[in-house]
Image 1: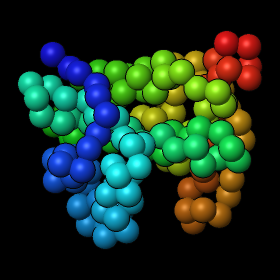
Image 2: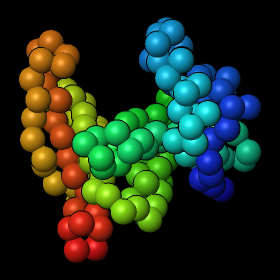
Image 3: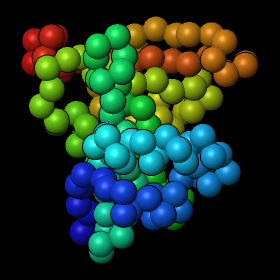
Length: 145
């Protein structure tokens, strides 16, 4: 069984174990602690253990932004990403919802395409040689949801 709920500071070590970037990046570890403290994290669990998480912040020109989806390596290709993004999409909000991913991240691009997200532009220069693609969830409240 997979369940989604709000993340909390007590889950830091478990979420860190899922997040390969945070394991080697002290800045990401600090961000994870901040996200947990601010209530920005939603966690997917299976049999009581975290298997993935999302971070949504109201940080994109006054709109909500899906900052991150992390699925533990051992749990990929099992529907956890779909479950997590569905949770984000179904959360009631009063702003538009955006996210981004690198051009090289084909997995995230396919997930967003399957979920109906639409292209919202591209930014060069954030990651050298790997442009950032931006997407908008089409059923945001300001788009006639």
